[in-house]
Length: 144
Image 1 (cartoon, rainbow, N blue to C red):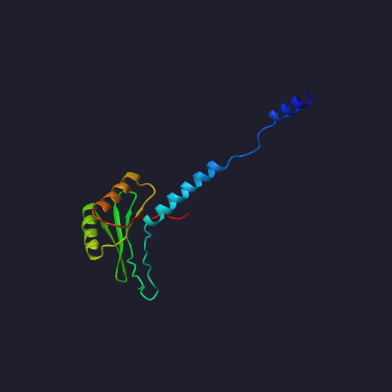
Image 2: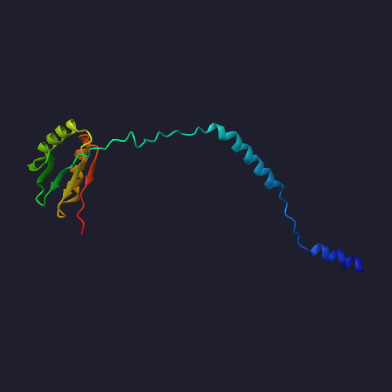
């Protein structure tokens, strides 16, 4: 009777051993995969400029295309030391910007619009500038 009690107690006890052999197998397989794949990944080479080779960049002042409340376009740009403002139609603006882009391909253009101008008009001007090949187009925001 005493022997049967011992066997009953052993059968009720939960098994506390953890079998880690499958985890070791998985880790060894992953190790082999990474060891094989590591030489296949070519490290990229980045050529960084040195301070001695750096030249100061001349920043071109942007051309500001101002769309007023009555949908008229006022263009402001620097010509040397002078700031020039001109009212232009959309066709005049196209010709003017094509001439500026020919002289300086990285000429930035900034669009400023009155708050009462419809967003659609601003987006049409922006898409026209992009269609003309203007690479750098931005929006001017008034800080409060």
